[in-house]
Image (cartoon, rainbow, N blue to C red):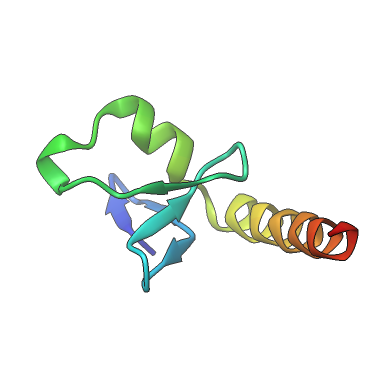
Length: 70
């Protein structure tokens, strides 16, 4: 979980080795310092729990298909 505001938890899928987060387009992007995170970044990279799980499953499925095609 990345944040908890007004009773709502928001989750992010984070690659801690590279400090990148998975966005809603299934692309990894650098996570900027807290002060530089604008609303569009938060919309692209923060999800409710169910959406985060579904997005990660979709990413894993896509990544497997891509590696098999190479």
